[in-house]
Image (cartoon, rainbow, N blue to C red):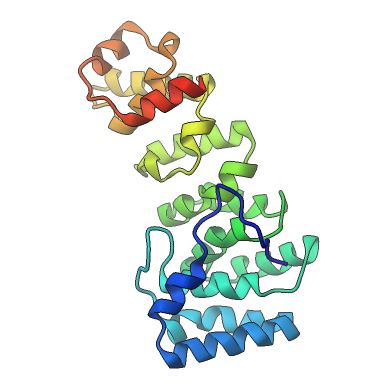
Length: 235
């Protein structure tokens, strides 16, 4: 069953913004679908892929597109718990196209799954689809992904040129070991005569002991970032 009280890290409830943009026909389809899933959970397997065609796919806020929000509403209608819910969500993810997989990943924080959905996050992080990597590193991963895996995921974002401001929880989860890993990466860039990515600088600066002379020179004229002060406070 869906969590009724969202955690502080949870994404915005998709329903208010979604219901404001759906036309009457799409809204009626969604209402009927929710009622149907509550009575017969397995029909979500038929309805989930149809969401984009029946409701649209435009962006409605910083987190949701229409199809993602629609699919989130369908998922949170499932009257399942624990392993049964995890198995149904996994089935939808594994058999879905990238848009359906993004919807599953973005909805994870709204579902009562504990650590049971971590295999889906790990699967996305092993791939090369940057949209799935970004979706995987949302509030669910920020809460549940172990430290070592979180650090590796951040490093993968740097390699894949995914902006680090899209990694939920970086301001609270960045630690000295992540700073050291990013400093090593920056040193490699300097040796290769390449620029140091702007968005790793706040993390590295928050832990000055990992910064060597070469990197210090590369960073000393870089503009400040508000994230730096937050990380220093956490450190």
